[in-house]
Length: 88
Image (cartoon, rainbow, N blue to C red; front, top):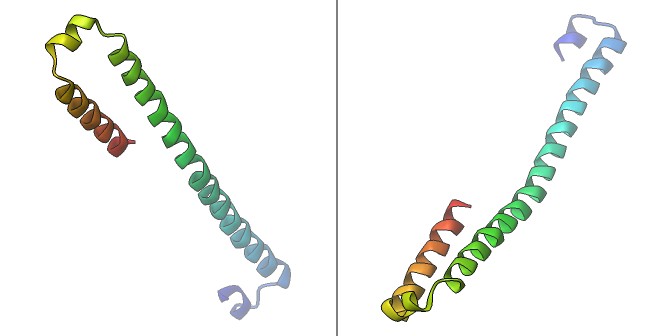
């Protein structure tokens, strides 16, 4: 608006408006991409971590299951998953 008051040529006013519009469109595009990619990446990372934990528990020796009560295994597993989900 200052350019209009100073008597700037109309071409310069249009150029400034175009720059502002392109900057706004760029920010909107970045925000939309971030809001679409971030949840997908978070779910994928959580699945990979959970899968690794399940493989580690299922490949444990039978003696470990005999020495460790099932409740303790489930409690530890659920608390680890909860911490991972909070971090992701």
